[in-house]
Image (cartoon, rainbow, N blue to C red; front, side, top):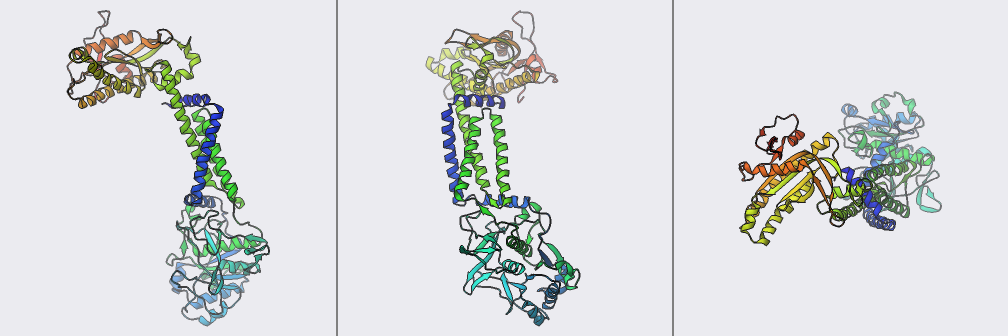
Length: 636
């Protein structure tokens, strides 16, 4: 069905469905789609999609400037090439000492110091005992292996949880171990930088941490974005508010040489590795849009540290999710509105447009809430909107098809569904006195006749012969309708198919399309005969003559009410009939069937530039005028 007729059929179907039925349909779709998606989300099956959306939203909004309070001192491949790996104690101690002298608030050493490295161990131990310095350790793994720090040094663990898809989206702030509570490097540094206790708790609920006046709630299993991850310990979502590189980076060699130390005054500093040769990098949401392969671990610690500092200073609110009731309501409402669009917008093209625009606005509207520290159910809501619309669209389309079939039966079993829909939609203009108005048309007529049917009928049982002929004529009718033709009538042992009726083809391109469809239909009919013949056993093989002609004709109804039939009559039809009969004078082709023939008028409509070879011999009914005939080439 063409888009034009589909729109008309949609309009008709939605207008014929009673309003109460449409609301019942919307309610049923809302419940089916909404409840299904809520169940899938609860089981965590939508988590991968929700995490991808979170990543893209996070990467779309970050500040292009580096974070404000934290500076990264980067130990690069060049530094390691000069100093060696691990970084020697003497170089590391001097870097820390220079930073402390420059007036930093705190220094986080994101380099393991569990074993001595080169000269300078005593100096390093001395500087690590400064209360402003925090050195990373590693929590015990599944085998009980951990990495400690030198005695007397403050420590914070460096472990970063990784989601099942390999992306770092969560920060682990503290865990309970056999030795007590262990704090993360960023939490220790944030407490030192802001001068508050790292374990300040909410007076109303001592199980909740506070940074400044901000209550920081931990992730709970099955909430927020995460339903398939281990949320043990005190975890929060990393918000990644700044683009890569997240922090202003200063080469470690410059700090070692004492250059530009004034820029560190009042800052929190993370000393970390930015070397590609040392495995300390991760995938983050920022990598999805920037094209960067990874984010260094030191950058992630800096981002978490800045996030905690912003909480303490009241500049940032922790991300929160809508509670289950509101999230469910949004999902159900999205499914309802999507279904309403498909059920109540009458024109299919308009419905699709509204659905697309609405889906975009819904996604953008809910996504923006992330900038205001609120995680909305964007992906489930968009899916609810989409499937609500698609379910309604499919049901209305099915209802429309049933209506078209009913209308086709009212007029004639020979009418195609498209024609029935068009006549019904334009009934005020096309019908007069309960029947289509008569009008002049430009058509391509296809006349197909079973060759030798009279002879075969005389040699077969009557019932067997009718079944034999009906098998072919039914198949030819199907082929005609598949190619957009109007089955004008069955002629006993043949079929007349008209292209361009009863709705007139007014432009030259439309008439050309009619002729091309007619020729394609003729080839398909011929193929159908060959297919049927291959399946016949102990019955005569089918022969078929097919003729095509194009020109003006008159379309209208004949008969009385209750037995009306739409007819196309005129010289164009007569010539097609004469050509069909004339084909018997030609020799059969290799497959035993007569060639498809058409008048030069049809051939020139199909391709006006081609020099068609003309077959002589067909004379008009006037007994004098010769009609040029063309044998249709195979595969044309």
